[in-house]
Length: 139
Length: 118
Ligand SMILES: Nc1ncnc2c1ncn2[C@@H]1O[C@H](COP(=O)(O)OP(=O)(O)OP(=O)(O)O)[C@@H](O)[C@H]1O
Ligand SMILES: [Mg+2]
Image 1 (cartoon, rainbow over the protein chains, first blue to last red):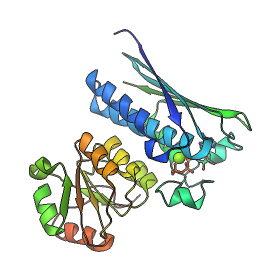
Image 2 (cartoon, each protein chain N blue to C red):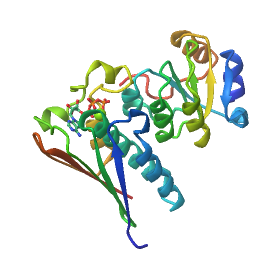
Image 3 (cartoon, each protein chain N blue to C red):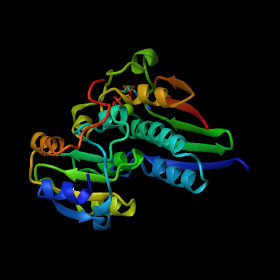
């Protein structure tokens, strides 16, 4: 199969729309006949990343590369960046404010969960410039 | 347990995807933290929650869940119900509070299957 590249703008101002991109990717992978296990891993990892872009970074851009061997998800934002990546990767670490917690997020579980479901995770970040997550999930 | 039984036990009103009543489910989970559902839930088919924002539906969708039960009389707005409907996720509303709703299902044999301790 020819690699497929999908691109999405993730709107940071509308929490209710967060997850649109992940939902669309999930549907595409299903149509392409990928295994339920791979689809689930991609859906959860991308959704966590997409939510992070909305609640921590005012949105950004998602690029998804689909090939025979797996799926690569690149989530790029121009948010505040992450000060201490090792700390952010720890379960339970969160800087989310109370209003985010009232929406059901902000337990500090997202990044560790992305790591758990991916075969490779790269976090590139610069304070005041933005963050790019590259998530590789193999079939 | 069939979703029809869940509906009956929780004295719930069906808000969409009534055709799912015959669906058989093996386990359920209850949480108001979608972060925890995404991190700890494995193969649960029902999400009981008191949150009514669209992310409850998105979370259920990512986890391949079949049904959402909004507890303690919470009512999602029309947009949330349509999002669930588009994705074939049955939605019910029950007046029971979270603890009681989970307790009723558990007491009737619907367990959580493997996520009881983290
Ligand atoms: N895209 C991002 N831009 C800036 N900071 C981020 C970004 N993603 C994560 N962070 C920082 O890393 C912390 C941990 O992220 P993680 O996703 O693990 O938890 P959370 O989003 O706070 O809560 P949860 O994912 O459980 O809802 C966040 O609280 C935030 O401080
Ligand atoms: Mg997060």
